Image 1: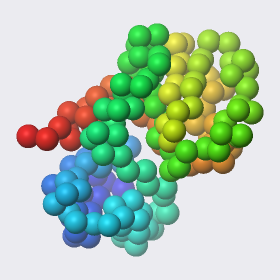
Image 2 (image 1 turned 180 degrees about the vertical axis):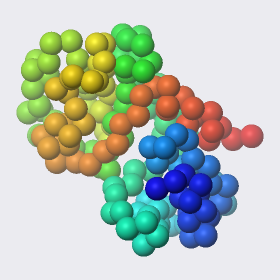
Image 3 (image 1 turned 45 degrees about the vertical axis):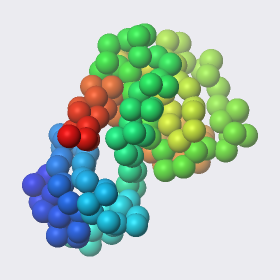
Image 4 (image 1 turned 90 degrees about the vertical axis):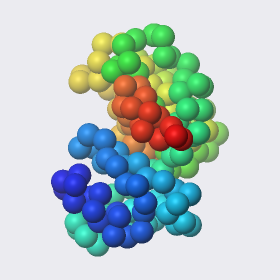
Length: 161
């Protein structure tokens, strides 16, 4: 779907000050002015109805994004394009999180914290076995990952003026 069409559809659905970043579906809007009780549900239903795609929607506020960046344990371990955060629909159970094998990967690292997984791929993600899909299956969660460069742009876009 084209981002201009997505912005228009979400504006028509009642979101205010809708902006997008890149083509990966990063959407920013003013939640306070929109007055929507469940923005994730509204976005998901709008995308399904308007574009025919049933996609998981993960919503984070400006404060959530800045807090996640503050808590990221690997920010200084690799280039910003190789350090990311997977934002989850809900925190995984501590029991499942405890069973995930951290030693399976040679140089990649990850840490589960609340509803985020902090990731570091020093050699890049292209051939890595540490993927979001692998983590989603083991943790029984749904998520979306963004690298630090993208998260910083989203923080910029959501900074109150």
